[in-house]
Image 1 (cartoon, rainbow, N blue to C red):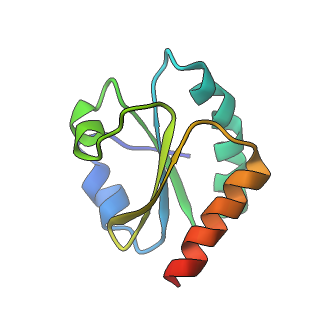
Image 2: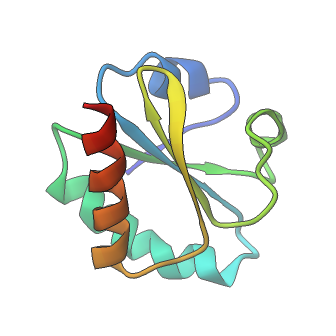
Length: 108
């Protein structure tokens, strides 16, 4: 899973040709740690069709502020440089995959 920062966000996320799922997280956030292994599995399983990355909201406040991240974890799904779905809170893998597939199917 790719780690992005305020400095690399535009290049890695906004300019990506593939959809990008961004995990806004923080070290102090227990649900963030719960969902991390699920996101790592999805990154491996969807390699080639979905980029999964994470950004520490405390260390990268500009990006968190830009996308009005108010709760952690927040997952933003980007396609063609624009956020198309926001998912707040940890969720089981099956539900997360279903929500991602629904969002990407609507936009296809």
